[in-house]
Length: 208
Image (tube, rainbow, N blue to C red; front, side, top):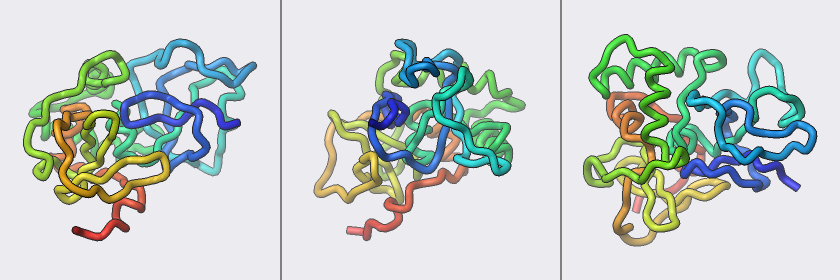
């Protein structure tokens, strides 16, 4: 049985076999004795995204009372859920993200906890609502995600791709009544130049 540690773009955490390209955490939210999640879904506002391996070290998932290992299809998925790059194992990416955040959100010298406070206000998983689209779908920056009904879509090169736990699929026809899922402050960082890491399936879908 797979562990309940796979994060959807909505921020929900499910037990599904696929792992993904990134790991991350929201603090300690599991019981190591049973390797199951607690009722709470975060214990800190700092929701981060990490690399799967760092300095040749690998963690045993959910086996100790340390941070709870959560997995994401790709970085765009983690962003949609409300996470940001880790300043420890992904320092270069985290600094690029902070610089783009400052530019996109018109602020300077922002600290990680300040970004976390803003993100926590904007995360769907922390009880907030979906956001209105700041512009038309085709003008959203690459890596943004939108929600239309029960389906989640990645925006890449101005077109929506349907998200699934194993990758992205082409969309037939237009999608209607979509709302922004990725936190608006992160979307502004993407628009300011942060290049998000996408699952390889996103680049394998031919243009219509």
